[in-house]
Length: 101
Image (cartoon, rainbow, N blue to C red; front, side):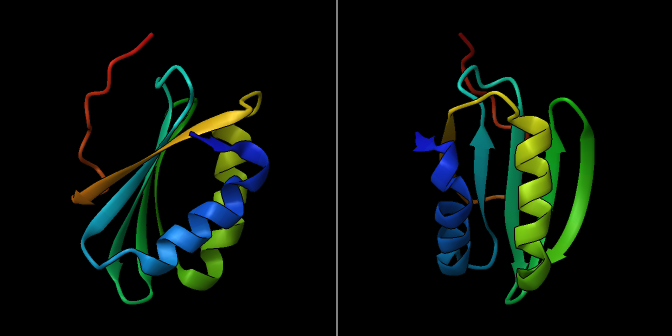
């Protein structure tokens, strides 16, 4: 669990170190909304939003910060804590079943 106020810096730091083909999953406390980010190339990311809105985005390292800021506001508007999972080698559109509260 990471604090929402530091989520942007934490996620950007994780994405810099993320190997090609690996993914991370951002979830709400109740685990009912998610943003999955997979690294598809040295400077390319595939982002899948599944929650209040559904969408799929292609982003570069430069555009990722702006996209992430928009998605955090839309998917986690009242959250104070965000769950961050490292999925390992995975695609962005793979739905990982997480237990719900």
